[in-house]
Image (tube, rainbow, N blue to C red; front, side):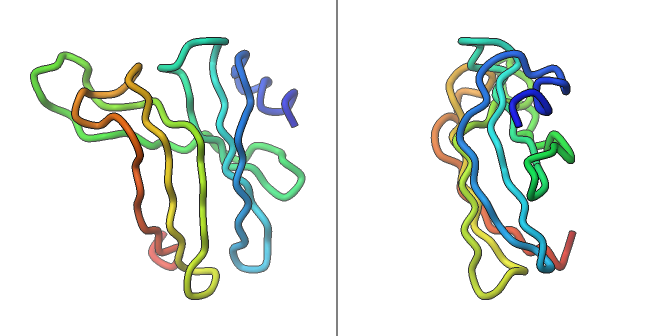
Length: 117
């Protein structure tokens, strides 16, 4: 699995993963880092049941503010828990200080309705 994700350019740590099911198929959210100890490079990769990467998820925070950091872009420690069947889930991600706006550091928790994707 690590070599498949490394082929996308992730040369740092490949870490925590969380499994979920959608339309009878298993998928994983996996954290991947572009270089070791570069906290601002953590991204979330969507993988299939064999851990082959399907996409680097385009997660980002809101733009703006006076902190000159642009959009938040670093996300790690993915967790996804399905609720009410396989079409709804709660997702949590950790947003480290590095790579994120000052007001967007810490735990991010949100709801996903797969039927609306």
